[in-house]
Image 1 (cartoon, helix red, strand yellow):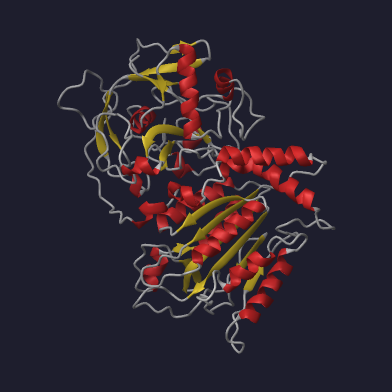
Image 2 (spheres, rainbow, N blue to C red; image 1 turned 135 degrees about the vertical axis):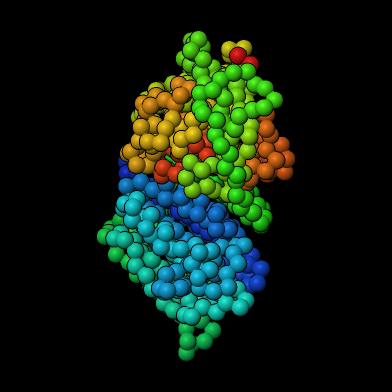
Length: 567
């Protein structure tokens, strides 16, 4: 079903039922991962399990981030996205179906493409469940569930875990961890059924109104034991938790919700959070997908001796390795008075694009560092604001997240495709030639002739609204220190769309500052966001940080700014 049709359907449902005075439910966020295509020990029902959970959770009002057959990098990125969406009143759920193992008392989920021959390699090349629990603890949201259908035997030839299954573990206060089998006991793969025994019974009862999580898991345990092929050694699901209140997937009122109230609660949640339903089977490549099967080589980047920042002059055949141009004192900002979009003239120059020695811990897709020559252009001084969007488009975006922030706050919850429509309308109304920046133009403008960790300096609090200082909300533009080009919020506040298609390495990227807007990756549809956002940690607001959603993605922190060239 097309996304816009789904929105119409949900809106119609709400209007048909009426609001009935029912209070809004706490936001529900889920990360669902299914890994089954292991080369040496494939799991026939892991994807059926994850797809079934995704479908059930969406119907129950969850925002669902969904991955299939993910490698370690993709699992880590999805986890960061999941944790970043949790707010104080959120109910978070992490679900994994696939292979899992333990080493030295810790539990690890096995990604695809992992080569693991012993417990040491398991600890470094698999996904540590403790990472999720630690991030949940730091986030401090109200309630978290971790559901691990991951106690199957290890999938690697030549490696036999000292202890089978997963280890018993506990989480922070307000967390419940559910295992498919008892500690140190492998779970059955159930090759004769479409689902694992555990997820089969979980899906059977998950939508029962008024059923508390503890009672739900008792039903699951009884069902799994009853269906176990060996009654003398049945599979026995296990849980450990410290919840401080009641939780029911389908409502925990003293009386069960009526069908109309269930539909209303789900519909209201879907309208508020539909922006995050971005990972169905057709759009899976936005985090993982086919490139999860590619072997990515990590390349050491040569450290070129930098030219002192601030050197300016005309381009020549012999270019320095860092940005050669800084703002000319005679350049004055150009203001489009109709909509208040103030443009800053950016002189051309050459710089090193990608993660370098001073950019912190580099991700693979931030490499290799390479030289790019960027012609002069003009860039919006700030991210496009809510007021500017409304002035051009006539109304706010339909799924605007921070509606109370005001017209001077950045517009967000807009997809790459919606931004293209905004730019087309803006050009029609003004006769201008606005566009999104290329990724090279964006990073060139961000760095502004300096070799700093963030856009504007090394002090993240001075230049960026991010997880550590934002209060988990957007803020008015230009509230932090600008960079040396006079641009605000290049790091943090909201992610910024660029024109390029996403490539998981810079190998072969254009060297002339143009958008990398072709090739097989464009056929798959992935685009690029830069700069990080208010609810992401400091490593995501680095100059080099990149993110790769699909062009229909409407994150609560996806925004943009425009450029013009020539000016």
